[in-house]
Length: 306
Ligand SMILES: Cc1cc2nc3c(=O)[nH]c(=O)nc-3n(C[C@H](O)[C@H](O)[C@H](O)COP(=O)(O)OP(=O)(O)OC[C@H]3O[C@@H](n4cnc5c(N)ncnc54)[C@H](O)[C@@H]3O)c2cc1C
Image (cartoon, rainbow, N blue to C red; front, side, top):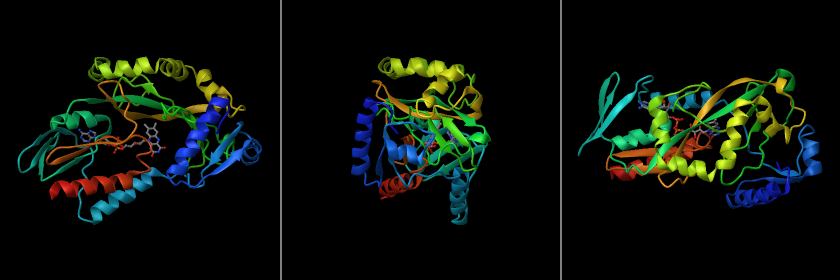
């Protein structure tokens, strides 16, 4: 959904990539946008009918059931504290004991760099945590939109841009933004870990990212601190929203891999050793694409075993 000329150009770029990736869409003009979404303003948009919202908890429960019915074991609440790769096996130490494996596939999200380092993977990237904060609209706004509404993303910073999402329980959320988190799994606004912060703040790549994104970075923090600033972003395309419409909603923390030279990794980053595979960067929409990513990782694991 586009609101100015720069965004119309970006929309054209998005349209080209959508076509190149074989995704079915319909280009809609301002009048059609108004007809389909009377409470949204914009110059036009792309309507992708295959866009949807699911209960990801239910998806994960179904995946877990597949694992256990096929003889797998899921151990929850157990933290891996070290990994040692030997010639013929991998030894994992956990906070409840240990285990041995012939091979290891590590998908450690916010801790992917630390787990990869234990296995001797080159230390040329680090996970920088960015909190994504949301608000929920009051139930009287449940019908404010008929579709999921996304502003046109800046291709350099695709995760920025608060969107309106009709959730599976019928409520509508606004978000997320992107602010540096001072703790890797820090879900409260003031969560802080001295060790995590020191690791981020002493990493040269982090400062390169900050320099390259000074403008958007310096906008995001006040937008996070002041509801009215946050609101201004969504009012660009949904002008009826007021600060009183925004209610608290739990945030998420993105695991963003950043290379030592400050390049933000926007694609998947998978690294390997002789007996281990590490999913080091799996940015959004990696939850949506979990199954094809899993197939690719499985293919690589089979190749490793050969
Ligand atoms: C705000 C926000 C909005 C998003 N929106 C979308 C969206 O709309 N669509 C979409 O497709 N994606 C979305 N994503 C992205 C999606 O959540 C991620 O791409 C995906 O979760 C990455 O999967 P992963 O398995 O690599 O990591 P994770 O899902 O982070 O899983 C890693 C797991 O490893 C565990 N772990 C880490 N270290 C250890 C250890 N030492 N011992 C034991 N366990 C460990 C963690 O506890 C965690 O459970 C969003 C993310 C955020 C933050």
